[in-house]
Image 1 (tube, rainbow, N blue to C red):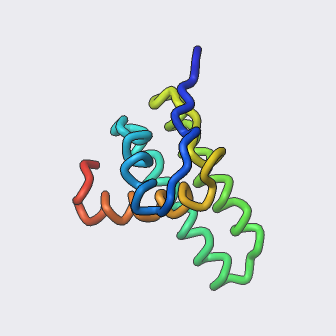
Image 2 (cartoon, helix red, strand yellow; image 1 turned 45 degrees about the vertical axis):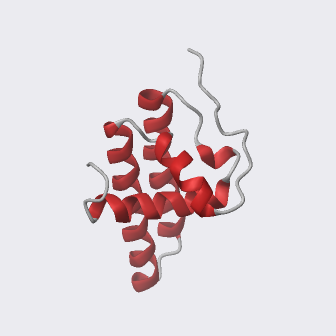
Length: 107
């Protein structure tokens, strides 16, 4: 299986990156996995802060990335943008989740 790597570009800003990011998440199941992973990670981070359980910070990262990467490798058949654009990609996860929950992007 050949994974597509369309992330070799450089971006001047997140505004320039986000359309590319959305294109890398065209598959509906992949988007769902990303949103579920992002929300689960956030819930674990909040619980870590409220309960004083730092291990939840780690499990939040693992949960979020595991679901997102399943979306990429199994459904999108591409490499996660995290590998080339880690900060923009992380921000993209949160912005896409917000846009899905606000119904700006199809769930």
